[in-house]
Length: 158
Image (cartoon, rainbow, N blue to C red; front, side, top):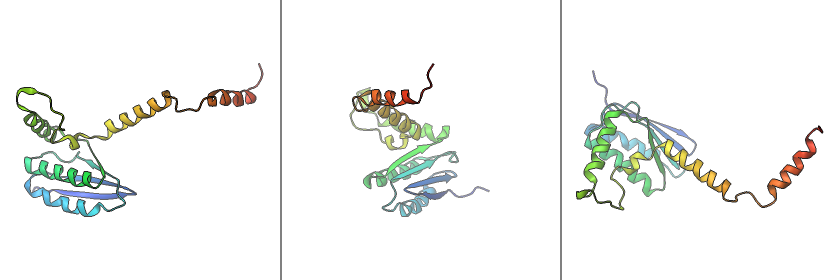
């Protein structure tokens, strides 16, 4: 017997963790109502673990896009991770169909851009920003020389 689609919602400070389970189709969209209720003023990040969603149809995809739009309007960051192959194929297909005819580039984001914002990409981007800051003169002039001078006092001679 198949179980109905459901979403476990957990709060960790300003972060809401979503763990959807089951096939996300037209009947699964109502499960997102509890997610919308869980996002209060203190929430800044929502992460969604898609590991236990083996199937996604266009109606389910619409539920995810609607969630992404809702959170974006409130300034809440949304990240998805652990996509299974089958649902990700639908996301890829929608992006392919969404491209302008003739393959010309467009400045508008893909319909599913918010669904592709994963934790790994954000971590890499954050590390790159941190590296640029460190290389870009983030340390005040003379601070390194001052630190070396202080460290030399604690080194043993010889």
